[in-house]
Amino acid sequence: MTENLAPAPVRIGIVSISDRASSGVYVDKGLPALQDWLTRALKNPITFEPRLIPDEQAKISETLIELVDAGCALVLTTGGTGPAKRDVTPEATLAVAHKEMPGFGEQMRQISLAFVPTAILSRQVAVIRDQSLIINLPGQPKAIAETLEGLKNADGSPKVNGIFTAVPYCIDLIEGPYLETNDAVCKAWRPKR
Image (cartoon, rainbow, N blue to C red; front, top):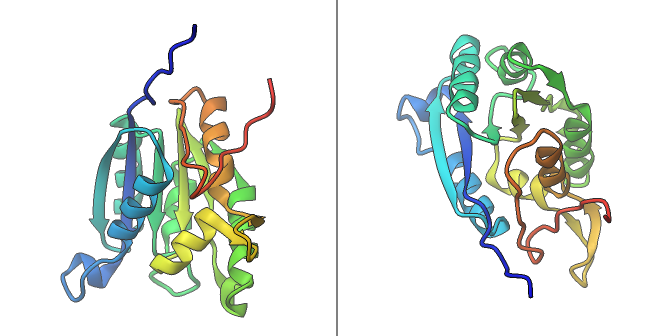
């Protein structure tokens, strides 16, 4: 008889990057959107490490390193990925990378193009640093959910896989914790053993 083991606890860094939200001009919507989606998508007990910071390249890089060093297996950022002068999240992320994972950015742009033609202006990247996966997500809560979850047919079956489908297996490969997904939200793909 095999026992079902409880999902392993996981530490996840969530970073909202916005000059205006970090200075109190408006309420940040990125952190609540990330926390809500991850809480629904994962069965693992999650300890969130939230950060709300301005669009400053050095501060973004410093925050990413801090979260990786704190043991976050996954770090998700939102904001600062467009072409505007202050949008420096991809540069800050690439500066701390040990490996680049270009497929994540490519897939996010493909998903977003189904909704807006300006998705080609997005510059999201994903990287590995030590045993952590860092992914830059879009800035809008609706776009965050769309890129993580993907597109669904009318019957609820996947039409285009969201990027989170590949996240648990990527974290397996870099020897991080085993992430268990709630299939109703997003089904993880792993090779058959």
